Image: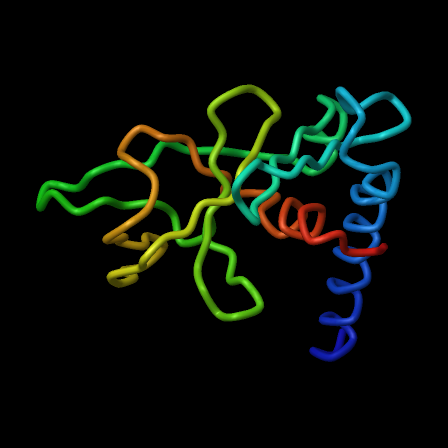
Length: 148
C-alpha cells in the first residue's frame, strides 16, 4: 500500500472512532453518567477550561485505553511514556491522567527531553499518577468535541 493510502486509511479509522466516541457529547454535559447509548460524558471542570471525560466500560474497551504510572529514574527525573503526550493546537504538550476508573482529565506537562520511548518532564503529574498511553488522541477528540 502506498504511504499516502496508508495515511488516509489510518486517518479515516481514527476519524470514525472519534466520531463514534464523541457522538454522545452533543447531548450536553448535564447528564449524570454515560449510558449504553452514550459512550462518554464530557463535563466542564469548574474554574478551568479543562473537561473531565467519563467513559462507559465498553467505550474504554473499544478504545483499548491503557495506562501506566509516572515513574522516577535513577537520576531522579520524572519519566512517562512519550506515547502519553498529546499536543494541543497551540503546540503545548499534555497528558491524560486518571485517578478513578474510566475518568480522565488532561494535565499540562513541560517536557525536558525525550530518550527513546520515554519523555522526561519538569512539570506534570507526580510519580505514581496513572497516565493514558493508548487512546490518548481519542480522549482528546472527545474533549475537543471532534465531530460536532
